[in-house]
Figure 1 (tube, rainbow, N blue to C red):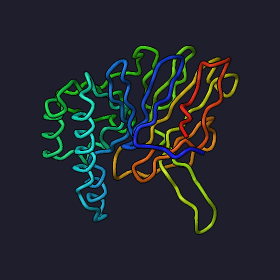
Figure 2: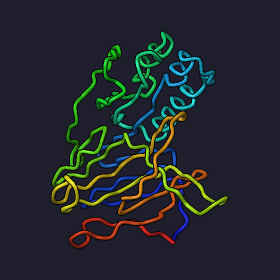
Figure 3: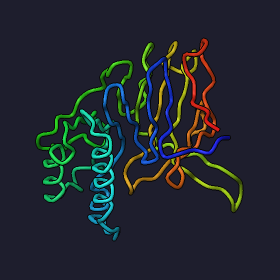
Figure 4: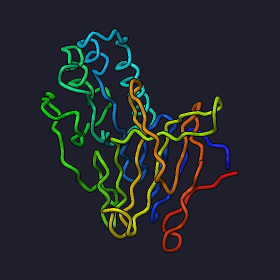
Length: 239
């Protein structure tokens, strides 16, 4: 296994994606920054049910997103669903922040509709259905499509590394090839993003053909994808 860095390039059918230690994806060819599962307002929802969680998680998540936008200067930022955790947690302050967010980002903000957005209204931010962006199919939950790389969230993937007292649960990017498994169909590949929000849990993801761990500001190739039908899918294995 090679040591990772804060930005790990990966090539899919000639299309480069940079996997970022901030748990985001940068598409340099389409100048698009992609994140999933911020779950803003989650602390407030728990507070409404009597659980005294601190309310600073939203600020940490939004500041991290702004820092990435200022670093890469994207033409657009796409949230792959679950920008918010639920309508109960949408305070007046959070609404104001969301209204101001595109201007602060310096580019349009797009939201692919997630399950936690249902029943909520966000001023100035239209919830979009799953859609294509070049060779990518953008969705909240997994929707592998032949001929596309499906970028999605929803699953909050983590990898369980080690055993016993030395076991770690680390956020990860998870790649899964298509073929005849499940309902993916031929060449229905997917890349699942880790949750971007600071106040989110994770679920072990064991069915991946490729995993990149996020740890201590690094993206560490853990199980790199093998080529599918020749050199179509390859990982950058730097020493």
